[in-house]
Image (cartoon, rainbow, N blue to C red; front, side, top):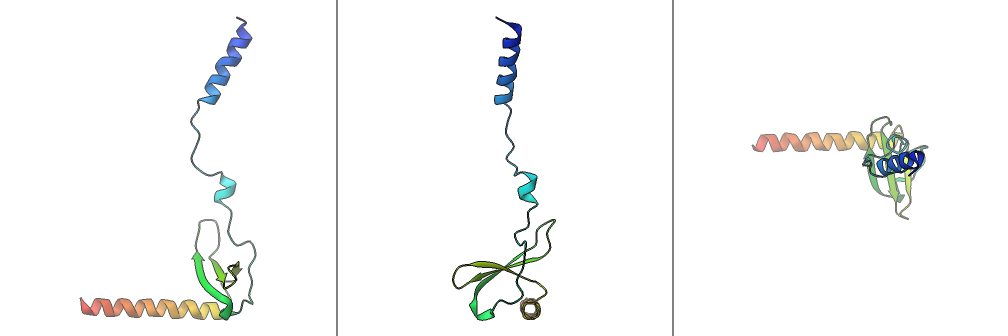
Amino acid sequence: MDVKLLALMALLAVATHTPTSKAKPISLVERCWCRSTLSTVPQRSIKELKFLHTPNCPFQVIAKLKNNREVCINPETKWLQQYLKNAIHKVKKSRRRTNKKN
């Protein structure tokens, strides 16, 4: 058998038996969900809010609207800032009540 052909077959055998990585490519891992944000989303059209804090991306707020469309909301929006303050206040208040009962 020709030495070059044998070397090529050995190389192909090694290449096809190398274990594949289960990790996602870096380009997919580092992508942020929100590439652009909206500041004017009517609160009455929002069905659900999701908050994402991922490495290499700023704080992201995703609103699922009543028509099932998802949009990114600017986290600096005034009503959203107030909503977050109220939610944090409720959590702190709830924790204080729980600690007093124990």
